[in-house]
Length: 214
Image (cartoon, rainbow, N blue to C red; front, side):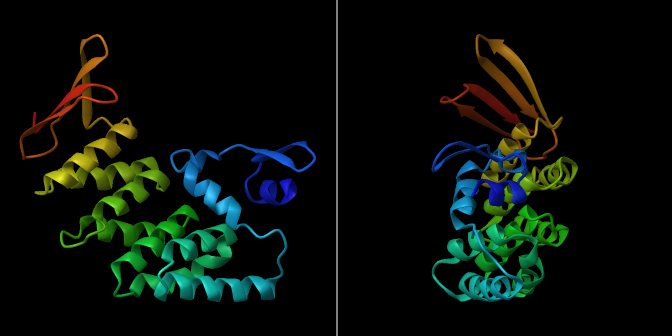
């Protein structure tokens, strides 16, 4: 098991005793720990090219048409890059959830084609998956790509989108968000790159006031 996991994610698994392995979450999944655990659980210990092809067909079909789309998405990501070409066909689906999951899976596997699909969903004002698409982008895309897409969304007319974008840019430590310490552990944060003005107060976590359009 250790060798199989380390073959996929170098330095991830360490055997500490009979039947016991300690896992280290890879850097690319640092903000998606539960997803990584699910992927590990879905990883097959044995495989051949023929078996892998059949598994990909099965899980692509599950992602496309079954109720368990999450299971299909995770299984395909667990299989790895061999899944990318078949996942690409799902980006043309009329079902937004299918496009989201396929694009997210592809991006996590390193495909910029997946990034473009997620960008389109995040920018599409009629989509129900805008925030999920944005979160997928900031979790797995390059910092520059994620920041560029996020900054555009700061100008969106939907406040929920602007707020979600601010939170993602904050995680990226992006220059679009400036921070000033007001008092002990209390901050004022300003986002100037938006034409819409608003004030939002966070009382839990790190207390702060956020000024949009400052």
